[in-house]
Image 1 (cartoon, helix red, strand yellow):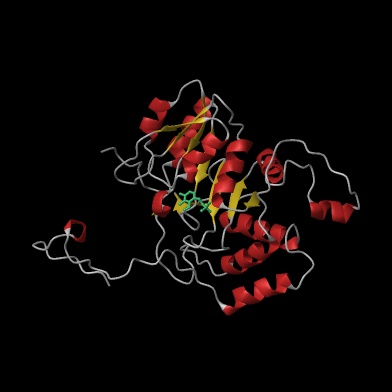
Image 2 (tube, helix red, strand yellow):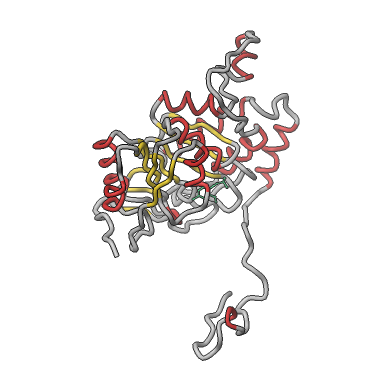
Length: 297
Ligand SMILES: Cc1ncc(COP(=O)(O)O)c(C=O)c1O
């Protein structure tokens, strides 16, 4: 337990006694025997990557968050890159995002040669303030990337309204928000695309791993191609159809999540309670139906 240092004592930063001897642990994943068994099963199977566990995990994840499609990636960062690509961002474009986030949210915009433009956050939610976002939109803006900071969704109705008005795509960085709700709707089913991470400091862990959810078939197709070198088909489709040839239809990457990781993800997903916290019931922030958009500082 951490104790607050008495006010007369110096902070550790200023030469006082630290309240803890060791740093807080970096991450504490929760892995049970059944998670281990799920992984072992895959290790004994024919497919270590590109196999059936990928589709199984994607389907289970889509249904958990209430989206039509889920496309897995090798990390949350790769998933953000895929989403920004699918939204069509390119050199000369801009995307409005939050300055209060992990580096990957803005970096994915830079990967596409576009420019991240920071809109300040509301002091009540620590999420980007839609009024400030509106003031940052220019003819070059193509996307808005809100972050559900610490699991609290941004004011998505207001942001989607702005996107509608200006022809933009909302890519929600929901890496902290698996299991969260916004006005009675599940994170992952609201924005044009929502991005999740399965790094061990997140709600469910696959080592490294990420997912994009969307209701748009065209986005899902671009995402699948982008994570697989831009190829028109994947190994399993070719295996099933007996066709060996494939086309490279766009410049993509190897951002695939392995069957080993997907089996772990599937097993972890089963333990995710309604509150979004594995094995527990710590409330993930949610907006209730009556919440008003947060005010500004
Ligand atoms: C808000 C946010 N976005 C993106 C990421 C990147 O996820 P990953 O570590 O899976 O690449 C993180 C990781 O900590 C994050 O906190």
